[in-house]
Image (cartoon, rainbow, N blue to C red; front, top):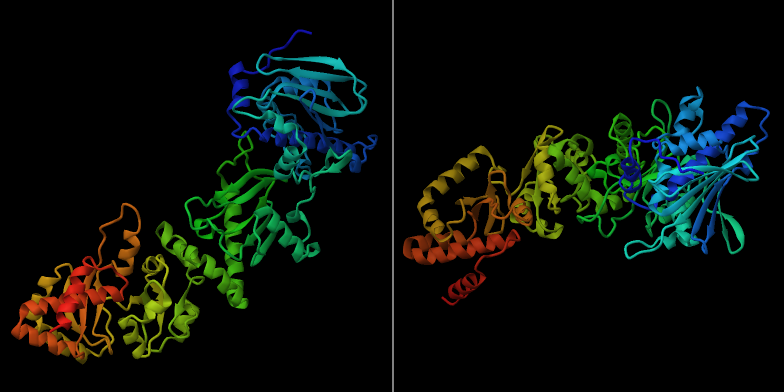
Length: 611
């Protein structure tokens, strides 16, 4: 029979279908199985509306067969099949979808799931096959036909014999080459793996012959479409472990079946620990996205805001607007609506954990608290109002994690400031002279030990109308108005001495006496928006070096060192400069900062000690 040309604008379009639309060759099996599922759906639907059709839905299935000797892979279904004209129309015209036509021509289409939409999925077979044959017999017909094509050159249709209605798609695989191993698609293990990955939840049995026995490969009904009341914790945990390769059960899960304007099923897990790559650039956020049980995207990032990137799970919706290859989804209202719904449910679940399962929430926060704090700071504070009641800091009250609400509920009646301090660890922060001074006056201090903490606090600015204040900020006032005035007079009187000391350490903005310290001789405070901890964090980022905090050396006015400094100012100003360098080095070490010339400081200390 004479070969026919494809009814498309050009052969170039056919080449595009085969080589450009799909990014992954293995997707061909998903597409052909989806077409087979459509054919079974059509037959089942027709049998419901035509009582003369005797169809047992329990016997509808998809069979995968392998003929290694002839390099053939066969995907068979016992669905509605196609007539010669339908083969001509559906396969001879590129981008013509019989599934879409069927769905659009039935008023009750909402009650039937049809996966195929664009009619190009079938042609993905040519990515792996040098020859494609489609043997089909329409239900109720005595005639069968075979459609044959080797690609862009065209196709032919001939009469053939077929015992039962349905369709067999026979792929003769391409020969292996240096770039591609097509023979792997003739291996049971590879095919089973692809079925489990992409088509595990097709609603009809997908069968393969293994060890001389025919076995069902797919799970048919996904766990997220089952009734929650019938699912045991062990089943959820097993699904989570298998799907997301996690050896520990999740802290909690959120199983949703949403109906209405937009329908979707989702099963979201909050892990109990961070994966090894979570805080690296290599980590990819996203939920697995399904459309009618067919995997569309392994990780759909648009369903998850960055501050919740730790969540794992699946979303399945028949309402998603897929693009032509069904590998990605088009941005639109449906996707955004689902994403917003999932976000709100996760936030509500986290609040539930925080209020009623605090141990679990603390465990969660130890792993992912830094990500939540990042969410407060990121995107110009877009999410801060949603997250502020979920973040926690260790409190000086009991060295335990505390929410901002818990802190403010414990505040003194006349306290208008939330005090916080930053450092590398709770123990190091607790030893800061400024922390000691604030605690001495009966105030509670929040300890910030993550690099993002202060950035998040700066973004919040206030909580419950209470202003945040770093205990190392120069503007911190703990004394009465009279005490402040007295200290200002003393600083003004010692201005010349401080100027001499600044000659030895010109990198600091100022030197002054303070009465905030109890036993410590010195501390380092900062002026302006950049604190010492922010300086360390910013300079750890590539290409951000050079950002400096405006440092102020504060000397305890009640410490014995003051008398020594005043004496040196009167007798030996060069010696005074040495003391200034040593005191500044001491303040840097207290803050966890490095000393630019440790050898010089070491020699100065030895020189001072030897006199």
